[in-house]
Length: 149
Image (tube, helix red, strand yellow):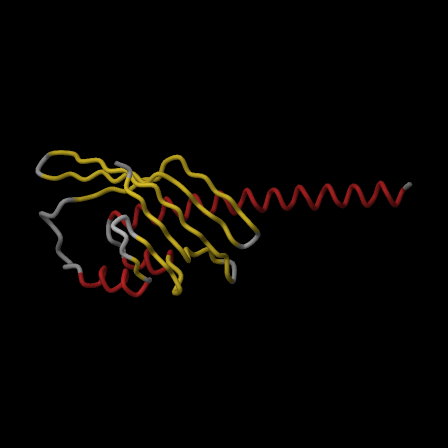
């Protein structure tokens, strides 16, 4: 009887530990997403470099498929002085995370608010990203964007 009780207690502690780990990873992924979007709003090259895995497959809302090197080259080709150009701020809403060990699917609604000639334009997109945790670091390996009409 003591063995069964002890085993049950150990099993409960292990399950609680796994749930806490999953919740911690989910919160980390949300924080990672928000930090990335804040950096993406500034076209921060380093934020992009950390966020995207080298083997990334990114399908944009126009159907164009690119990799991390394409994204990084586009960012580096942007002029340093972008004053006078429209500023777009990206945020995430309605975030859903499904975790499978060291793999997670993050689905959310991206809201892009652009100020152009003293007018505010808002666009929304459904985004789905697949993340893999390697060496303790989460990175996006696949990304899909769909514009919401």
